[in-house]
Length: 254
Image (cartoon, rainbow, N blue to C red; front, side):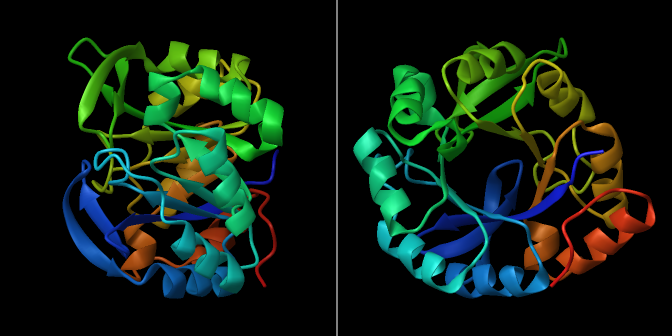
């Protein structure tokens, strides 16, 4: 079995970490630099840092904030939100990001994926897929922080972005986001079965049991959560201890 990564997600708006339900009703969850340091000490394997209003507000990601986080955190940092060019990605990588995440920009300009892959290598290119199920059970991709529906089928889009050079996928179930009902296994498995790159499952964690089910059944190698970590309901260490006790390989706690 592959080693499962436990990944806190910092959704940032106006310089603060926020969290909502189904991408709406955002409430404050703290200072991004302090939270990043806290998760690093807890033994998080990576941190995902998403500037969730950058695409909607048509501006770039906050490079200065990334630099501050990178100065304090010594685990891989993935940064996304408003990245629309190779130059913007380069600025984030120079500021200390290890990987750059594309979502809206990849849909508006799919060539950007291969341009970034050619410039930095596929290991630096993450494509985030925000997906929502329609009444017929099909998953469609949304852009601009979940505001705009596209006609892209999430499973087909996953295959396309990998063919263009994405080295990792961050798959978020908008239906499960913040609901604490567990990962959408159908969505994550459906994508993981179709691609040959690591998949991070996101959306819906409410308990350590949800992490365990995700590790055993989602086919993702990364499990991402936000609110249960931010509000102190579960610690990274607790998650790892439950996984190890059930035979799931994780990276050791510090």
